Length: 145
Image (cartoon, rainbow, N blue to C red; front, side):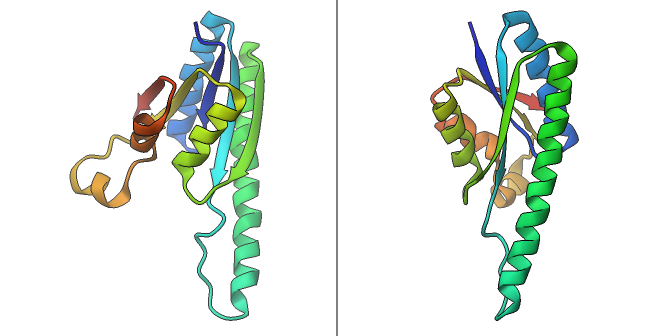
């Protein structure tokens, strides 16, 4: 059924829950897991000369955190004997990076976490999971907190 499962991760506990679910599913289907961490390269707005230094510090920290998140996913997969490949990408819009990765890697399922925000919080904060659900061309399994 599913042979390549994309699992976006941000290193949160909820992302770990989604990874655990994906690992269990992959084990039963003999599927591979593709991990991705999407970094927004332009959230930092600095003023004057400090902006370049601040942006570089942000990117360095974001890449370090992304590496840790992907390593955690890799360890869960390796412990279960599931094939894993992962990468960090930079996109201004996180959900687009997730969908682009799914398409580029030929994934046939996306498994991701959702905080389940509702009402004003969802309106103000938006939901990456909701946007992936809306725009993805493959099935999406949402793991709720």
